[in-house]
Image 1 (cartoon, rainbow, N blue to C red):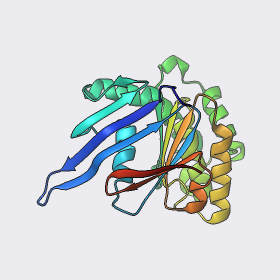
Image 2 (spheres, one colour):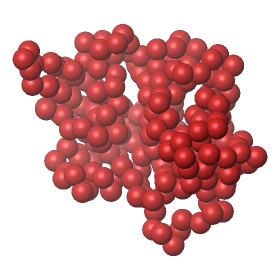
Image 3 (cartoon, helix red, strand yellow):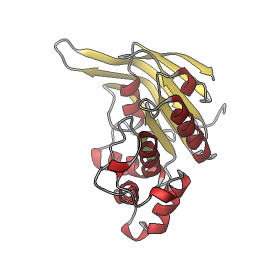
Image 4 (cartoon, rainbow, N blue to C red):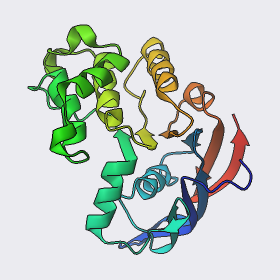
Length: 229
C-alpha cells in the first residue's frame, strides 16, 4: 500500500483532558488505515486505545495534531460537518451492543439508517439484507431482549454496516462472548469486508489481534509498534 492515501490517518495527535491532575491520553500518536485492511489496536488499559478510536471515529478532536480523511485535514471542521461524515463514512460496533431491548431485530438495524440515509432509501429490503448477512433471518422479528449475547452482537454488526460504511470501528466486539462465539463474530466480520472497506478493532484478545492484517500497539498514548499480524 506504499504511496496510497490512507482512508484515515492521525498525525502527531495529542489529546489532553483537564485535571486536576491533567491527563495526557495521546502523546503524539501517528496511525493510518488503508482501504481494505483490518487493523488491530492493542495495549494495556489506559494506554489510549479508546481515545485513539474516538479520534478515528471523529467523535473527539485533537488538542494538537491532525486528523486526515482521504488526505484532507478535518481537524477544524464543525460538529455539523463531522456528524455528516460520521453518518456517511463510519460504522460503530460497541462491546455493550447498545440495542433497544423492546424493539425487534429489524427495528434496531433500521436505526442504523435513520441518521445516515434519505428516508426514501430506507426500505425493508435493505434492512432485511443486512439482517440476512449476519445470519439472523429466523430472528428478525424477535425482540432484542430475547436474544443471546452472540445474536445481539450480530444485530449490532448489522446495524453498523447497513449503510455500507467505508470504515468500521469496533471496541472490544468479542469482549462479552465465549471463544466459540468470538470466532463466529470474527468470521462474520471477515465475510463483510470488501476491497473498499476497512476495519479497526480495539482488543485485549491475542486471538482477535492475530486475525488482523496489521497490529498496532499503543502504550502511553503513542504507537510503539506497527507489525504484520
